[in-house]
Image (cartoon, rainbow, N blue to C red; front, top):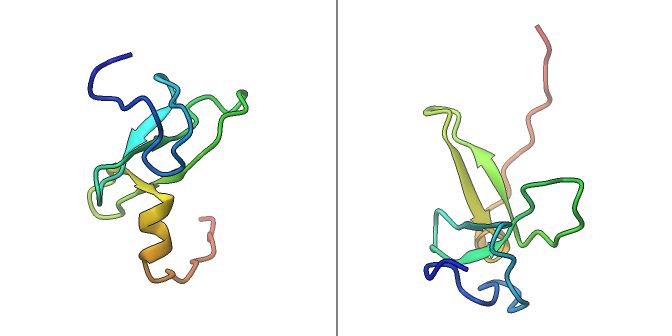
Length: 78
């Protein structure tokens, strides 16, 4: 396991899978995040896309719980 990945998830404190994790863009916690949807791995956060830069970023559940809810925008096909 690389040294920069903690042994336990910094959100739920359960053992960390070295292949399925991400670092929160807001608080820098390392948390469980599934990279292979065929595997049953706990997600302790999510990824989003920044609409201006089209960059992908990760947010842990702890930070998500502290953020105001964004209104959902319905998808409108062309």
